Picture 1 (tube, helix red, strand yellow):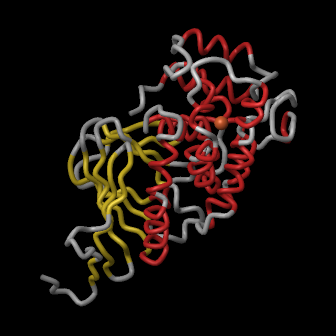
Picture 2: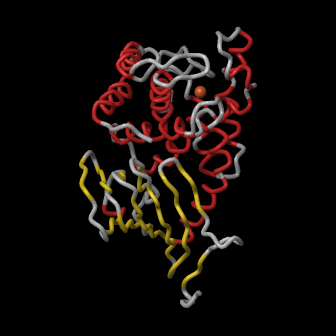
Picture 3: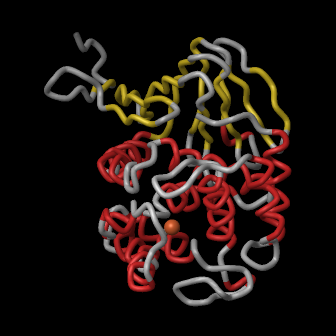
Length: 309
Ligand SMILES: [Fe+2]
């Protein structure tokens, strides 16, 4: 029963709090309290997320660990969070990441108007997130891994935290244009014909158009990442044949992590290769297919990082 007039709960008609499901866990929006939204992050073991919304340090953004084992990382330094400890995101200059070593629960508080808009916009994307995760028959975890890898490389390359949101969504939705490609082409066991290949190659432009037409503003802003994710460093990629630094660093990162994940994952038309073989392929493509710095940082990351969900 509601007793405090300052608090507004946002339960839906079925009596549940609105929830966003992700591979790493779920976020339930509990309500607002004196202008602050409260959400509960229920993280799965090995799940992770970044504090990323606070780009100018004017927005309240705190995380309190309720239970479970969680480590936080900032500029490469990791430490354990204490139960009951509250992290204020504005105290960190760079991206701060939370890693759950066991199932864990974290209460997040953030300026309500800001967070509720973000939450409900993200929730409207759930259908698209599920659709794109299944787009060519491989698992939900592909998109999530691409996103996680891309963010880790971004941090290692010391890129600004205020652009992380674009990378987060551009990487997740990099192949959204494949929703428009016929299933027979996407999952063809053999080699594609020239005509089929031309159809396949339209997915980056189609994806960018889908993003640009989307009502959620930050998806429009991330469209360039989708558009450029098959450009190659030497200018032989598509759709525009962009070269070197003409390709955004975000797209260059997605190109590397997507290639790695594709190589190490079994698909309808091919076997997976080993991590060592995939790394050697990335090295071969360094400076031709791939941005050299991105390859270096990604390989370095693989040497240190744990496997993602
Ligand atoms: Fe693609």
